[in-house]
Image 1 (tube, rainbow, N blue to C red):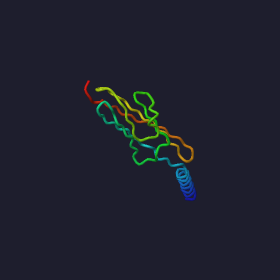
Image 2 (image 1 turned 135 degrees about the horizontal axis):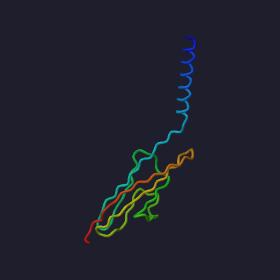
Image 3 (image 1 turned 30 degrees about the vertical axis):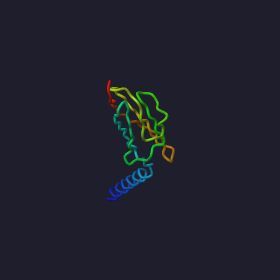
Image 4 (image 1 turned 120 degrees about the horizontal axis):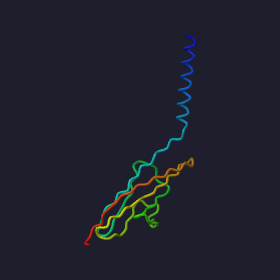
Length: 117
């Protein structure tokens, strides 16, 4: 009986220590962002939505692999394109948390531009 009691106490201490360790670990809100692009006449307009996450520390926009520095750190971007051209927009995000932890993610969308060919 005493041995069973010791095992239960040891198990309770182990669970308690695990719970304390789990609770003391930093809690990060894993960012979820999505870029959505709409076509216009020989142009496109994209907007970045973040669903209940902290604001990104940096936002970088790319059109077909080329950096668009004019839109850095903005949540909207626009550009010109030829009629019928498919444009791929990629957004790279960096989140820096108060304790210095860095999380990077990216999202992309493609759009076919409208207009006469």
